[in-house]
Length: 289
View 1: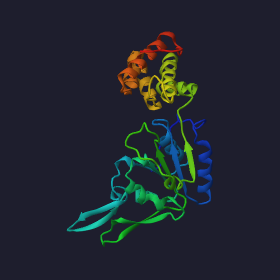
View 2: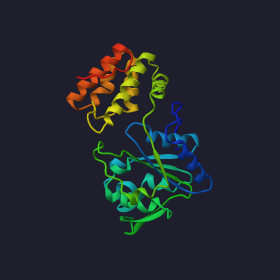
View 3: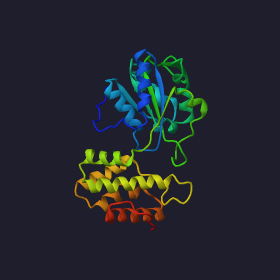
View 4: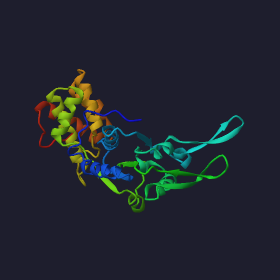
């Protein structure tokens, strides 16, 4: 299915621009692309891939790799059928073989190593692999093929802050012929996005965007940062949405962003910073809990 385009998605400065040009060039000559997209959570990795497909009227499929424990979870399995069994391929198998499809392996490093190894041959020039651990109704390993001009996009949150993820080793990473590094929006762009998407006031958008930028700057410090968790654009939109509905701005920021900070000391510092932002309308020099 071709996804709907998001009119609020902003390619400029997103990290996607050069990659989409290369993806188009490959598709135009009937070649497949394998793209690895890394960056912090909630900054547009998956949305960028979906938007790419939407604007080019290409079918897209998103597979949540955090649910994959065994290869059968990804590729299909035997099912009972009128007293016998038959192999039913997964939606992933069908979409990989679809001409021009954009297949998004979301959070690929949350899949188990066994599943990632099954993907290995699909991601290189061979474009097909036999999955020895997935058998059809005759007891034979299945073969999975990738269409000639399909685009496979793998997204990954990389870093110690993301629990439940595995490191992407060099051999797996080298399967990608395009790498995209996505980061959060710049302050002015995020502020404009909040107003456009939620209709919140200029002052509220300013405070929310400044607060988010502060968490990102502080969390990147090697030591001594006031908070260790960065606020995602997804959470800034949630806070701005609450504010646009008449929720007090500090309450909107607390339930939308600040309560995602688990550490009590950091949480208190975030409340203090947000309160100072609201009262002054600009970033304070330094705030402590």
